[in-house]
Image (cartoon, rainbow, N blue to C red; front, side, top):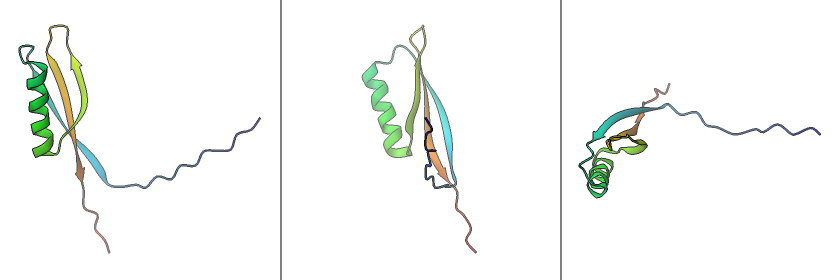
Amino acid sequence: MSRAPLHRRTSWSPVEWEFDKVTFDRHFSRNVVTKLLVERAEHGGWELDRVRIGSDGTRRVILRRRIIKAVRTA
């Protein structure tokens, strides 16, 4: 049985990501961490990329935001 190849249309755009690592101590409640991250998202344009909770209770959060480079036109 042969399958038809999958053709996906992708448009290339000059987008890169900027990352920011934030660590919260285990003494911060979940609500406080949420409020701080929402504040950064609203005012800095950041979005959540990854959250890791360590065995000691610290939260390691990686935020990202797009860096859009201007493309010179002729």
